[in-house]
Length: 529
Image 1: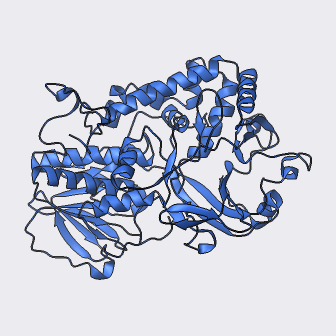
Image 2 (image 1 turned 135 degrees about the vertical axis):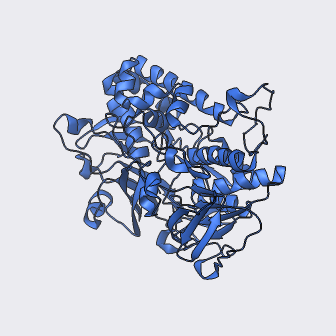
Image 3 (image 1 turned 120 degrees about the horizontal axis):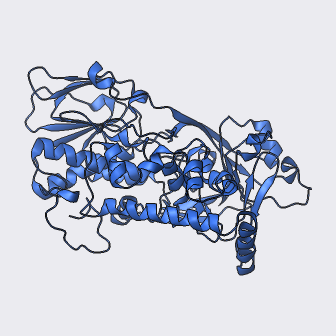
């Protein structure tokens, strides 16, 4: 996670994935009691990841502000909170600093997660290491080596980028990303719209052409050279989404490059989602599988059937990828949600006493210095070469003690921690070839993020009256932050429909507002009203 050239693009390992974690005061399957008699109306949330936990939090904000009489039940089939966000510990020793197995970072533009970190008093770690260096590997050669650290090194890095790609490609790409961020930030203002049609929402943000084209097509149409997009930009899309620029839509490409001010919670990003639920006063049922959802006869209610029983709800929020849940829906609703392929990503953490990867693997002399951050491009394979055996290799400092929510001192004779993203499982023999001495190894295969193909068709946000789908947003943008934005939108739609008010009251949002009111610079919609 490094900033490594003049245009301030920070190509980082921002997304990719939880180790079982349970919170004692949340209800487990054994403690679930399904009542048939109910007093207050209830909303069911399915999934306790970024989308589900934040949905519960947004409902609680409306309940706190406007006295909405509603109970919240959150169902999670796993035994932990966080979804695709988790931590692990070297050697399974929780006295050591945790490592993110799941979504690793969020950035300055991610105002919900930044605000949550502040409100919940969570310590952040910045992911900008000026002393590290970066290389882009095409499977046979390093097409670019970028030093960072000293003033002289940074100038040398700048010159190398300009020499290879020219001045126009980096500056035009930076302008595209900056414009995208500006529009994204409008989603935190009082004028932010609610939406139940993502295609129309895309048009409103002026992102329809980005959604309809691959990253390489869009950049080429905007005067960015093919070499720049298929090497440097592709390094970002491969590390962030496991997808190449000639496949991933341009919104995914832009998000991959918008990583300025990258941070993570020192104790693990899952702490944010745990705090969302703690502060929501929701009933959280871990280890509880939702099996089917049906309309309740002669009412506007929904019956949610789980492994622990059934209950009737005024509203249902599905905050998990539908086709991964195995939930049975009425056929007319199920057919509204098209199958969505996900990237299968192998995440490998290891410890090693090797300060850098071994140069021999990369065809270099034994005394050569290999970068500590290695990104990759598919460009060599397009030209008939060998596809890289990994998406990225990144060193993340030395193993440290973990004290009072922060990384402490290094151990005596500590090992380095290394994270690898790859399409295929990397073997112990491969690790020994690349790193020599290897201590602890942990592997995880995730369905990490949607395959972000160009499209103008998205699943519906509203499946039926009182039934909403947070993850309809994922084929458009897939990040921790946008899950919290999508859930805010869904909650606002549901509360207006069923209770006549929303997170910020009965005032309509976006262009429906009669007047615009000046707000402080630190205003964040939902947190503030």
